[in-house]
Image (cartoon, rainbow, N blue to C red):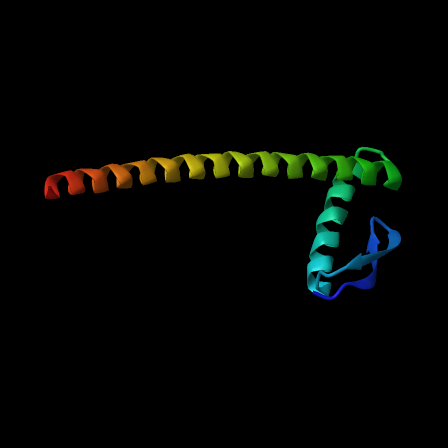
Length: 99
């Protein structure tokens, strides 16, 4: 995808970002961040502190999702390994019966 410089407004701050995301994707992301910032600012924090807390929160969520993905990948590999063992056993049993 083509990367381009786009101006966005997040938490009242104007930012230029280089992105390959579509305009709609960026709007959706900005809306999510703005909503989170509004939640945090409601606790009496300024925009810079709110953005920092939202960034930490989003990074934490990302790490949790990565851990879930790794666990799912491990379970999928284990399941596939067990299936392959069963297939090998079935083929070996079939070959033994044929002789």
